[in-house]
Length: 386
Ligand SMILES: *Cc1c(COP(=O)(O)O)cnc(C)c1O
Image 1 (cartoon, rainbow, N blue to C red):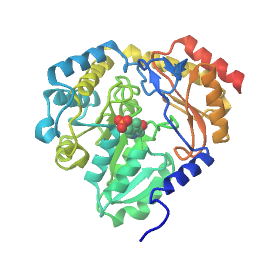
Image 2: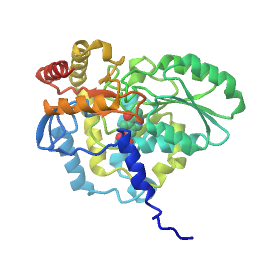
Image 3: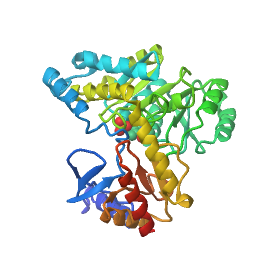
């Protein structure tokens, strides 16, 4: 078989379609440390685009911990944790996460994405059912697909819809797993956790909660939405990342000892990949230490969140109970234009568009280290542009 067309020529056409829909994305380089003020494309801008909620990614103590770990253990973990890649540092981090989460144990993965893929595909299979929130993060959706289980989405945060679907389908399957973000990453709202826990228990389902945007941010001690909703101790599979409020890189699963032991034996994205690097591990450990000893960082974050939620144009705001605040706009072009104008005014906030979300929006991430003048500038620039 031969043809004049290269087997790769479809790529160019696909990219053209993406451009035409205004869905095309590319990267923006930030120079220097990630902080509240960043350098991008030669311009200085106030940063409302970072998941570095507590401002720890550039913290001197995390940097020093990472440097010390590199000097002690080197740059790479050099192997799978089960073979040659395990260090005492990994275990210390896992114990600290379990202590923060008040669970029996935890396990760290190389990223939150891999934690979700590996966990979901290890605990359910072809005989099983997954019910996921329609707005779940990509890693939960891809993990569900990878598992081979039957996957049904329920309407966003809609416990009645979930219950209906469980009543209709649950009995035809062996195990059932409900999956949800705790803080929804592109909307900023929270899942109805107490109702989900009750329903999961009633219908004999496991419940997997993705605390990526909640760890370090929600709850009195920063343990996440489980703590925020007073559900600490409920039997759950809690997943999170070390890359957002913790300022490092990596993911974790926290839960009971059998779950974690099982994952060490069955989660392919943990078994067949290199252990978390010493630097990332040490930085995350240092971050947890700071979260414990400096609760005022989280309090400052919440003061900033409340200030902005109060001052931004209320009509366009999506309901949010987190540092993620979204302003809904009518079309991808509008979102892009406003994001561009904000950038010219010295404010960095991304336009989030389909297919990531159903409706276009500007997404602002608040940090504990934003100063009042940063927040004021955002409010004033936005009101001028709109
Ligand atoms: C960011 C995020 C992840 C992925 O975490 P990484 O450590 O960045 O791979 C998973 N789930 C949710 C909800 C997220 O927001």
